[in-house]
Structure formats: structure tokens, C-alpha cells
Length: 322
Image 1 (tube, rainbow, N blue to C red):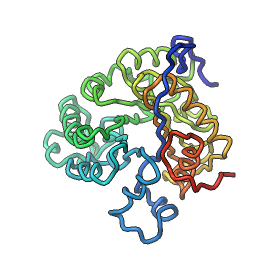
Image 2 (image 1 turned 180 degrees about the vertical axis):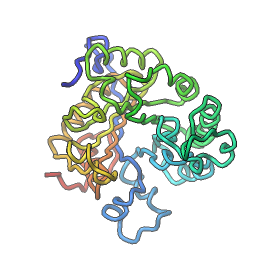
Image 3 (image 1 turned 90 degrees about the horizontal axis):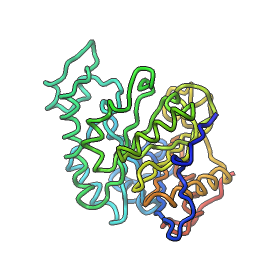
């Protein structure tokens, strides 16, 4: 069952003589996904031309490679140079920050000497987290300097559960990255499965001024599948990620392509458009990211979404999904 927010926690604002009309942006999780390269980009398009080609279709992208390695600022500067002035990057944070297991070889080379290793895994320490946060700020500086930085996405591990953890464990990350536009995606449904707990979570993110990410996912009681909710905790940015609605695929798939294999229908996409419009009444920017990264399903869904909103600058030659 989806949590019911109290009136203080609702995403939609009440009647107002001057309602918000936030900007709605849509894009995909990654522009370089291998399935996109195979099934969406023009055949033979050089890798160096993919981002500019993507940016002719969308004005938003979620960087996924940064989850696996903090990017070099020179690479990030090149991304900014390849895209139009109004293009926006949401950047997924390095996986150690989001409480995922990391091997020593995955750390930035100059930070490996700080690491404490348990078996083949790096043990999290406050010192190492501070240095990773510094690296992150340096990495995204070219986007911030050009006005192209959207949100920094902290996609927490499902192991980060309310049974064993507290949200204030994220304090160091919030303090450093909050001013840059931090967005947090919880991946353990127990944070939001009951109304009282859900309201406490929403109150926390409102209090620290951080965006709580909403997800579109299957109906499931599996602890890794978040329930649906609609709320704005940071009036600057609301963030929606769409993972597909196939419960078996989501909970048993072994690869990204298998887990998120789902083709959104026209009616389902229209429903997300309606949700984005409601969120835009309470947030300056609404970011909608299709993460159903199987074949060309994500860009197809995002393209159709764009045709349903007249304020989105996107090409209009789209086929209506089934």
C-alpha cells in the first residue's frame, strides 16, 4: 500500500493567487547506455557525437558513469562544451557515498592510501568520505560554473534501511553537497511503507532542504521496491525516476537491461506528465528521468513524454507507444 502523506507533506500546493509554474525537464539515465547505442542512436554514429546528438532530443540527462568512478573535471568540462546553454546534467554520486560496496581499485588513485580494507572491500570512514566529497565538488565545478548542473543524485543502497541506519548519518553529505542541489533516492521501502514513518522521512528532507526522489516502480512488497508517493521536499527541484513496472524483472533481473525492461504505454506516460505538472506547482524545476534502460525503451518514452508538454523543446516526430 502506498503511504498517505498528511496535508503538510503533500507535493501539491493549495490554491494560490500566484501559483508556481515550474519548468519540466525530461531525459534518460545515461546517454551512453549500450542498448541506446545499439537500438536508438543512428548506426555508425561516433561515440564523440553521441552527447551532442542526444542534446538535440532532450535538455536533461542523468550521468550514470559517475556512480562507478568520479569523473575527471576535464571530461566534465568537455560535456559542458558539447551541449547547448540550456542543457542540464543530473550527476549520480560515486557508489561509496551511497553506501554500496567498493573495491580498492575503484577509488580515485590518490585516495587509495587512505583506505582501510576488509577483505576485498573498502571500509567506509569519515576521512575517506570527506575526501570523496571534495573530489565530487571539484568534478562538477565545470557544470556549476556554466549553469548546467541540475541535481547530485545519491542513490542509496537497499541495505541502507531504517532498521540499521538513520537519515542523519547522511549529515556530512548533506552539509557539503546540499548547496549544490542534492537529491536522495531511498531504495528500501521500509522508510516509506507506513504513513507515520513516511511523514518523518519527508519532514527530515524538508528540514535539511534536500530533494527526496520519487520513483515509478512495480507494485510489490519486496523491500527493494519503493512505494509510490508524490511530494516536494525542496522547492527548487522535484525529481522523478521511472524504473518500469514489471515486478518479476525488477526483483529477479541480473542486469540493468533485465531489471528495467518495461515499455510504458501512452496512458502511463500521460499519467507521469500529469504528475509532473502537479509537482511543477510546488517546485521551480521538475526532473523526469526514464531509467527503463532496455533497448530503446527509455528514450522512446522520454520522447513521447516531451510531445505531451508544449514547453519542452524536443523534436516532434514521435510514434505513440502502444
